[in-house]
Amino acid sequence: MQTVTNPAEYEGLYRQWAGRKIALVPTMGALHEGHLALIRMARRFADKVVVSIFVNPLQFGPQEDLSDYPRPKEADLASCRDAGVDAVFYPSVEVMYPNGTDCATQVIPPESLTDRYCGAFRPGHFVGVATVVLKLLALIRPHIAIFGEKDAQQLAVIRAMVKDLQVQVEIMAHPLVREMDGLALSSRNRYLQTEAERKAALCLYQMLSQVQRLVQEAPQPLLTSEILAQVSNQVLSEQDPSVPIRLQYFEAVEDSTFRPATSLNPGVRLLIAAYVGDVRLIDNWLIQ
Ligand code: AMP
Image (cartoon, helix red, strand yellow):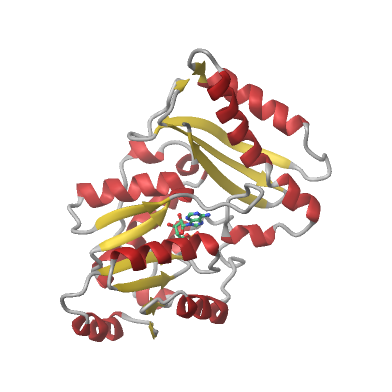
């Protein structure tokens, strides 16, 4: 496995790989089984797999966890090596933003995709995401790029960017990967320090699966606003009061358009974000 830190180093590899199908898996590191599932998918669909590891300052707000974000470099490189990755692109902030983040050209995704959910709670986040992903696609020039459904709004933003800017890459999505008990895998799960916090983090999954159950049992389509409020109140009322939980949003969108869904039918995606203690977690669920 090669570790490259700048575009010039990658250029050598790219030339050697002429004629091979290249897949890119963009990550911020602190790799877990969710990332590894994306890497395995990349290996199935391409000859050469590049994983980028870059904690992108442009997508963090001023009050967010940029400086605390975990960066276990050696463990990440070992995971990539074990997973059969061909190259890790591990650039510094200076390599990605030579003129600083303030002076960089930025990609603005359509407001219709970013005015709600994570976009509303994290102003500027999706500009940062779209900008860094476009830069990575331009640098690595993969045939396919793989993203997780864990970040459903991010996936919608990236699909729209690639379509609107006519970027020649195929975007593929991997289903969300969970722990055995339902917790969505996330690099931020390592911030859940106590047993009580870890248990409380399950409330996101509990709300999602509870709605799925109600939809399956209901004789006719359920109204989104009523049901989501009822389920979130019930699940939150059952939690251990020693761990504060702050729900940011619990909403439903049409999966194909990402616009609000008024009733809960199959093909609607539930989206949820909550602070569990100090840890912000997101999850989502495609209703069946
Ligand atoms: P991150 O390192 O958090 O930026 O994630 C890198 C990629 O891995 C993104 O496309 C995420 O959607 C994906 N990912 C992270 N966690 C999961 C998960 N639990 N299941 C599926 N994909 C995931």
